[in-house]
Length: 500
Length: 94
Image 1 (cartoon, each protein chain N blue to C red):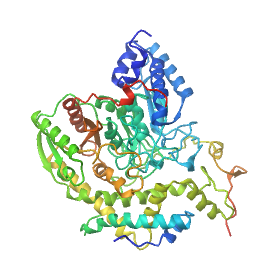
Image 2 (image 1 turned 120 degrees about the vertical axis):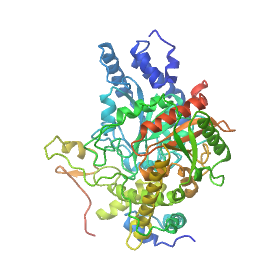
Image 3 (image 1 turned 30 degrees about the vertical axis):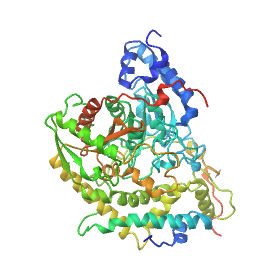
Image 4 (image 1 turned 180 degrees about the vertical axis):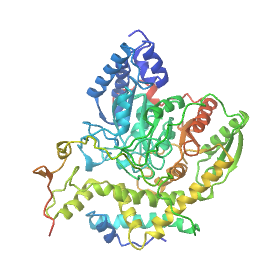
């Protein structure tokens, strides 16, 4: 290798790494060595990976190098090391969704996102930790132990995609993928100083994503820059006949307006998410400060009220558990996963397998969903939540008749302490206050880091756009990124790390 | 007011064999969570249709053509118990 020192390669963006690979400054094998070295130095502090696929990633990096050598180019992710949340099925590689009930399960097929990444020549480093079945906001609900925040290891990285956030924040992958049901990409991105994006529902295939709440779940990327986010999303998007909810239409040009600035745009600040009773004052100040900068840059900023978003959290905590109780019925000890040794009938076996295999948060949500769907309560709880979902969608639709995009904080607080909310489910649920409405509406939304708080922890800024409005969303996000000039890195990514 | 629920019945419907202690804990937590969730009932929704899904689509059809599927062995390999190429379970009747 003739380029920069190999220790630095883990700090490149995907766009920079792509340039270096194509100009022959270094190889994909060099990149993989750099991120693997970073993982060796940081994993003991973070516990972000559940599985590192050394063999598969080495083979993929060598294949990418062979492609570059003969001038074959399958796109911007060729030769780039990326990580996957462990709720995406990988052929031959253990996939647990961080649950004991799937301990040791080896999927017999690849999720569509994995098929696409492999076809694009990406190098899949491994599988990352999550809250069990993606239920949580801190990655503390993993059956394999929590992941820690690389900015401060006494803090949570957010969740449920906390492992995917931590690896990209620290450089043990150049980018990663998570799933977002109520904020599980954007919230951990905000808490770890990354760009995290939830696409329009139906743009990315869910085939092979272990289902939590099917009408809300979407796969999306974590990256250090907005440009990288576009490169990651482009590679995984598009119609898939294996997912009945996949949109059968050409993929929008996500990055088409990245350099256009915001002059002449109308952008709405969501009033309800600037409420000091529920949002930290430093976050409100940073959000207002960025709104002012956008105004100075030529955007027209207006306040937009979305009153039914106040009911979004309540509606979400009926809809998501209802869908989860149905989706997780498949874990019954018959076809895969844990089977109890308790003697009895098949039904006894199922009930004990489930009680032994699921962790407390998953059990809580299955019970909640079962109740909300049960005879006599269905209409008052689940039915009413679905009608509130219609009201939320209508409010967003009418807001987008007035403005091109909406902005708000991503989270009510910056990274909180490990253990701080783990005994208080309701306090934990409030972490997703600002992110849930976009899931209910099915719209795209992104979190961009804009500042650090007094404790040196990152603050995320959310940009929301109408369905299939990724181009507008990325246009605003790219300009927010430029105005913020956020270059700080997690302390674990920059310090000489020693094993504990 | 926390919502009163018959936690024993709900756990049975969910096929979860919980201990007495777990039933107590989850029952009281669920009551508190439902007290919050119940707020959705404060919003007037007369005549508002429910949204079950964010996309304006009804059915997704595919061409009726034969395609490759995964072989039986690859699925049976991860099953807890099999016999004669099928999944095996304990007795069905008590």
